[in-house]
Image (cartoon, rainbow, N blue to C red):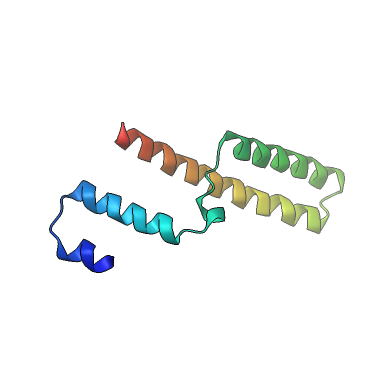
Length: 92
């Protein structure tokens, strides 16, 4: 399959489509889950709750660490959405 892609001269859109087909064949199902607005809503809600619990627990280290981990996850989710929206803009 890979030899077919490299041996035939093709235009860029055909190469991208072939790579997408290969990726979908080897991509596990859990990796192909696309994040939607509900994922970010849950992440923001969890971050707010952890922030309030951190203050109410007089900065318990476990709760504070969970709050920081949530901040990293929320930041990563934001970058993912920016990437996806830019990809949609270029396709339109």
